[in-house]
Length: 267
Image (tube, rainbow, N blue to C red; front, side, top):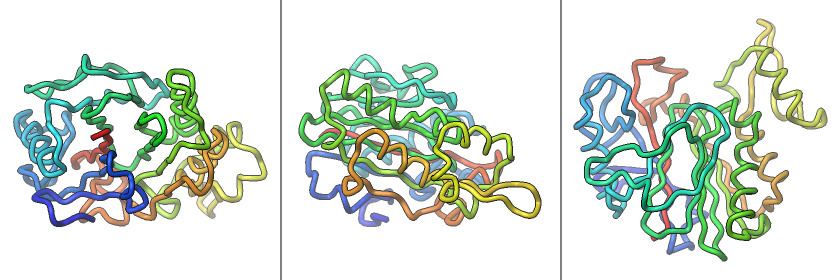
């Protein structure tokens, strides 16, 4: 947790040596939102005046040294659509969302600040330090079953010739296995998507008939399947539900909550 800036944020120390990279994750701290949204809500549909959300984005961007008008905001629908983005999709002075039905983005253009939204789902960061290409994808359980992380890597390969073994990847703050209870219907999807030899790492059944699901491990396995090297991965140990005093969590708060964002940019 970086507290030196006006608006605190989370970052991975494993990426500190990439001085040309800006990789952060927001908290609930440092904004102007009030009540159950306090204080840095970055969600547009949480029942707050639009200008408050815009001001929160402006404050956060200023704190990390970026320009709010360079934001590229995702429009997430819990699917696996990933697309290349350029200046056409920048939010501009009014901070407007230009994308539709997109859960992942990648770019090679400096200063574009990719932003995806969360309140327990998994942020996936991708960084090619050789070709200077970055990707950021939102992976809930549906995105994880659909392997949006692998799809992101494949598009980076196809578009820019990125080599998976050179890509650095991270799983960002999200709900941990101990806090993520799901139905057998969800687990059936994971049984279809992942090899049986990995099931013990991914989920277990409880006395109440429900399951605990490990999205962190699932996305780590997807990274490996994509060709990313284990030594090039950073897997979070920060759970949004366990840390709901500083992070928004749908599991904790239900619909009375704000939204967090993952941010990624080439400086």
